[in-house]
Image (cartoon, rainbow, N blue to C red; front, side, top):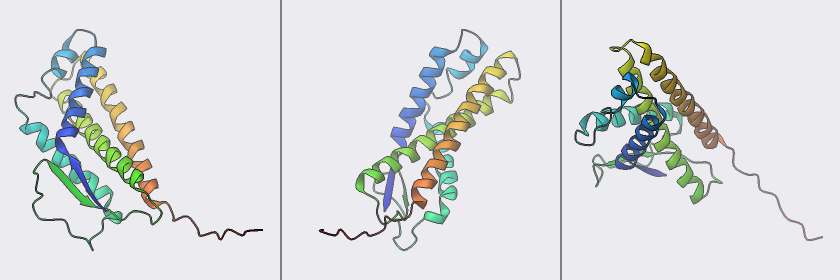
Length: 166
């Protein structure tokens, strides 16, 4: 099944994460460092980070990539990140919707974690501990989400059971 993930939606999720984290941080250096992280005026770094995270997710899902149904070389919309996955036979359209959303969340979590870790390296200070804690929370979340996604893709088909009318 072809999944089209919206990089615009993923960027919106990341901007929401950033806004929520800014609200929860006390005034100080960590807040100052986090504020310009995902500047909407300069979207190129965020777009690149989203594409890199998508690439990582694709490698994680490699055993489930369906090579029999090729993806067009260039998607009609450049904001779409596409991959074909083999789904369990018994999966429904609603499962596909949930899987797509889970993949978008994994990408957003990875981008946010990576960005926070990049902030900490050149800025080793008291606020680094706060940023590292936030980054670790996002790492744990995307790791758990990936595990759930892989479990859903590994789900065996439901066995056929004949109903008897007696």
